Image (cartoon, rainbow, N blue to C red; front, side, top):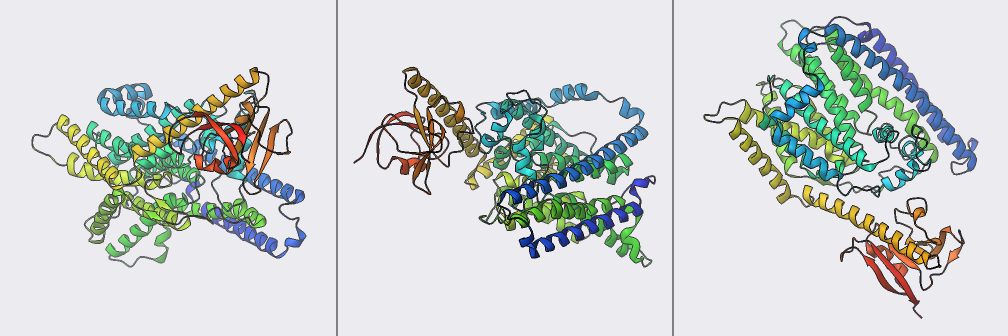
Length: 613
């Protein structure tokens, strides 16, 4: 690691950092003291499930998160200001003479027609068939329409509850907040998918920029850009995360790529603007996901330690112990201090309220398994080859190696606390880093070597063949493939939407005949009286409660009463396997009114024709 020289700036002073670390340590100590007091004095506090206990918890979480948000916004605002000020100072004539966003876009399209077609096709595939009836989104979306579209810029309780009101030891307060803010401007799901597609394209272009700057290339060829785009877009983890809108891994990957690009720029140029930009993205990134701290702290920590060891081994003079805290590592000092920022935030915002409620951890029933795919092994080979070269002192440990360490740590911790499935959305940050390594290998083997007779057209053909080979190997060696994930997701959307529309049509026809229909659903259906079904014109909505083996009226006539199914009632399965409603049908004679497809994963509407004796 070699930082270019940089001018001194007060914000980077060790004195300020020391004060911050003392403050964070004090906050952490106070937080742990409060936690210990709560554990030993539970009798002095109201029970967490009582009205007073819930009120106390709500006030604590509201106050602490408000203070945290204010401090975060002030910090982000300061870093943005310092970035802009220093960018103005550092701007050169060449920077001012750039093409601008429109010119750059048109130039990219002209030079990368095939990649542009891939982006457009992928975006269209994301949008087609997309509905509001996604898993989890069913609950969140109901909160968006409560204000009849008249309260655009109000805070959405569903997003806040999901992230900042948890009591299961999870901590990701900035997760989903991109969608939260987007909901102020549009509640159209297809608009959200366009935003998600823009995030994905941004990630690809940031990958291209990172590898270009890492290898100090003047320009990245169209073949390499196509290869990177194909590798990242066509993978089951990408398909799962980006063909949905709720997974925070999307925003985490975008912020991570912004972070490592800024960090690489600072390593190569030492600019103050890149110093502040790197710290800005790291500060935001650590709050997007519980274990995201690994992606933002391990790279600077490993580069810092490696460089100190390298300087000690190559120096002819014995280095003083304080060399580890030399001013040349200012950025690393600040980035590593974010670990204490995260710990103190976690203690105050998540650990204390979760301990008070005592409901257990989110991952108590986790599967704890590891499932690896072809790209994992490909990444392992490339990362190991680089690590061996570092060990043999053929190359110095660089930013890509440090990022690889964070990827390995991320995969290990994910498998320990929950599960690591290479094809799942949780593995998307790892797969992003794997793509960086595979693309780096492509650049070394193809771009940086002068092959006789290989022009741009042949390189483009080579990129298509190479990416197709990797994608084919993925599909042949994995049960969960990009294609199967995509088909399952689109099929689910289709049968839920179709069944919902059919249920609406049938109930309206029955109502027009003079008798309001009763609709029976299973309690575990994601749709309910508060989630879309209240727009169906039923007389009563009844839920089957399997634990009590009873039918309870949840909405409409006789709300709250126990119910006995009658001939003429409708039994609907909208979003689950048909096996779920079998207990409902045990003593009933029914006829099929609508069935979307012959499989178990289908929408199904049945009409009760009689009661079995």
